[in-house]
Image (cartoon, rainbow, N blue to C red; front, top):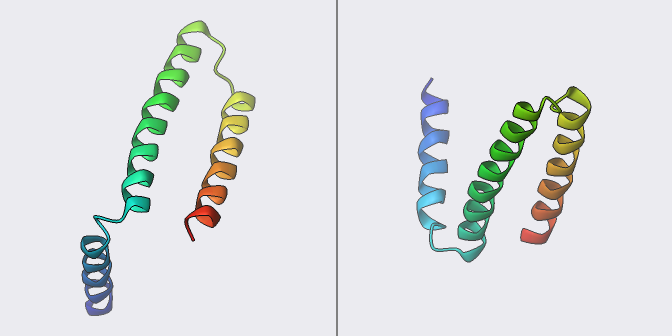
Length: 75
């Protein structure tokens, strides 16, 4: 328990130190906008009756590829 608490404090401190970093700010903005867009798109497809596992898997794959690309671009 004590180790977990120390790790949490270290992560919190690191986040506080990097909150003015443009990469972190950009990632937060992209994550927020992307989440809203995905949720709205999924709801729209659900209303139309076109939301299925194949579409969800394809979108998850695209999101994963974008996440990996962002990881390497942010380094």
